[in-house]
Length: 130
Image 1 (cartoon, rainbow, N blue to C red):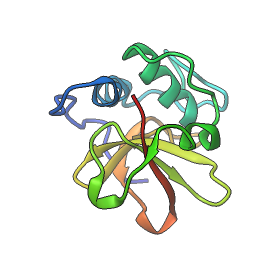
Image 2: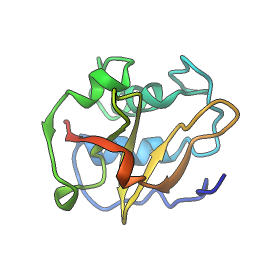
Image 3: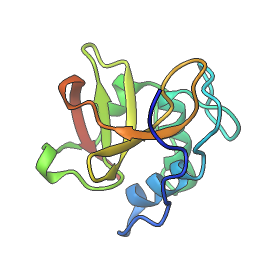
Image 4: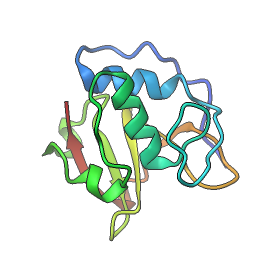
């Protein structure tokens, strides 16, 4: 259902968050499994948790809502690759911004980790950690 599993991983920038985004992008095409936290299968918050752990920031909760509360809130115009994008109210989905209005996420059962346009009308939190 749309999106790409071939988004380039050479994101510009330094720091833990952009490194986590690059690492998450290496998992494009991996299967979504509820409760999956890598390195083979992932759910949405498991992908975020695993990517940040590999980038040197361990200990993120395996919960979209709890991850979205971390760090500091940013506006859409301030978004940088590596920022977290959380959806719905209450928050039940999360992914990592990769720039150009796109984010990498593990969408749902039967789908794979991929890059898709951010559904701005469903975004309920944007935050920067690391």
